[in-house]
Amino acid sequence: MRAVGQLMMYQNEPSFSGMDKCRTVMGLKLPTWQRPLVWTEEQNIRFLESLWLGLPVGTYSYNMVLDGGALDGLLIDGQQRLNAIQRYLEDAFPVFGHRWSEVTKVDQRLFKLTAFPSYCTQSSDEQYLRDYYNRMNFGGVAHTEEQRA
Image (tube, rainbow, N blue to C red):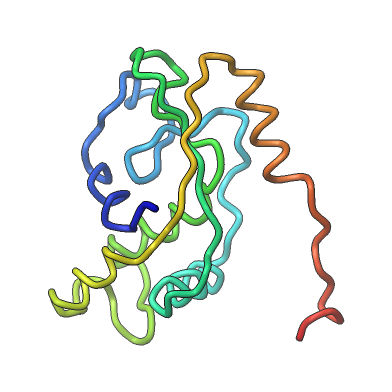
């Protein structure tokens, strides 16, 4: 099980070739076929609150083939989640009334230990990665407002 802190290790460290030619989030490359950012600030904040509360927040998936190619270090799923974390760490918004830079060092260390599961693929086949993305993002049916608890 990965933790938020493991993800943060690569935040400011371009680890993969071609990083200057593509969009990135938390040190991972975004494929051109991913949708743009769509979460509102409120959704970002709610996600971070859920992390702080230790609630299950879903997963993210990335590809590692260690060949230095275009598919190495690609974020397949989780762009909205990782962007929310990155923006929070950059002090873009407060969570529970505090920006990241205002959180005590002890609480920052605790946050970094928060579980945030991930899946790693190891594929050099872009069509496989596209299919993976589509399965992760187009298989369910959105709830309506009337279906809220």
